[in-house]
Length: 221
Image (cartoon, rainbow, N blue to C red; front, side, top):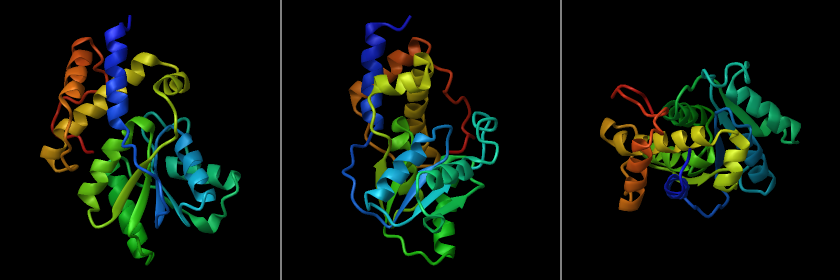
């Protein structure tokens, strides 16, 4: 049973994880690989709106995407973009990254090797991972401006999309934990976390929303 308090706490985490950045044209849009093809759809929408001349999709596979995306997350994202009318010349793929840190580093290096001048990045992630992606990119690529983006949707819409409310809450709790512990491990910049967000996180942990928590200090971002 998910209580009224649990839902209120979940909304606090959901709102905090989203950066609320105002979108503007950037040098490149980078779509972070995951199970969610909505990342590719949002990247295409931004491309068609003239927000970027170039898309870069990054991601290998993970236990959660291996079956659904056997050719790799970035490859499936590219295929989706081409289906939606983006020319192949406007899409790059990075197929080796297996975590957020590698997504950023490998994308940065690929663009540098291609001689593409990057001063700003539209960083596209799942809605609840905007802040984590932003904090990681600011640590690993501090010389560029990072603007976070995701598919516009409410918490209720995202839960409907995933189809498992408890899993969504677990993911929100896990993402918050990483924001708290990864800066000390050098994976991302430190960000201010309001007291009410910390309190919501602690209550949800105490109520058993823990399946996405990490238990060691060796996990990569």
